Length: 105
Image (cartoon, helix red, strand yellow):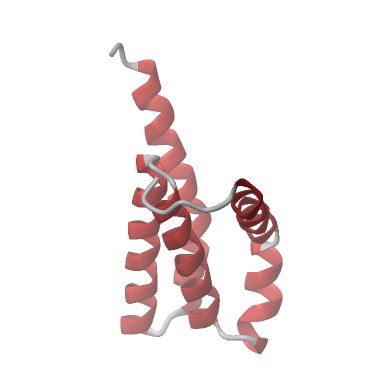
């Protein structure tokens, strides 16, 4: 852990991450026109960036970098389709983590 937070604050932050991830489809479909696609991806990037700083788990850092790539691609192309890559990135990272756990140490 790079930064130390009180246990209760860390639990609250983890709850915020879980709630935000559970609400992701609603954020994309309803917030895209109201809030803006860039703000949604930037908010998720900030959330995962802080989460990767608070955790030593490598897959969370990989997700943060992948989200950064999605935000940069969205900014360069101005296509909101990159918002739909977020679940794909999560599933690919989880697939890699699972496949890595199947290999002998």
